[in-house]
Amino acid sequence: PAIMWTEELYPDINVPPPHKRRQKTKVLQEMIRAIGSSRKLYRFAVDQVRDRFVASHNSRLCALRADLLMGLHDVLTQTNSPQSTILATEPCHSFAWHLDAYIKQVFVATQNGG
Image (cartoon, rainbow, N blue to C red):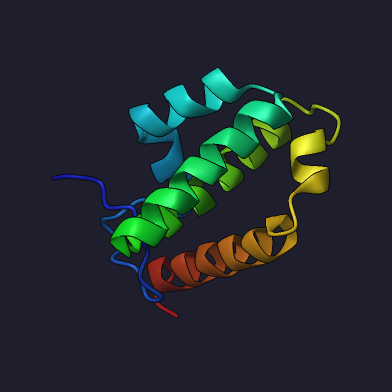
């Protein structure tokens, strides 16, 4: 089955949690590797996604932006890298992190029958 860019509030336990899904999404991982720690490349990618969203109103592009941001967050967390300038200067990082943590918490509660 195809991996969707969207998450449900009460996820199916057969669908991996957000961080696991991001790890398995090859295109997203390629984008993250290409951007690395370059704030300029990140800003360019985000601007392109935003411009395409404005033209198409495709909500999956919003999810792509969030996945890109949180994918970069995942990489920095896993490698114990110092806070990158990308995350430090991204105004949506705190909101995206809290939303991602909430989805993970709901996912774990769903798996545990709660």
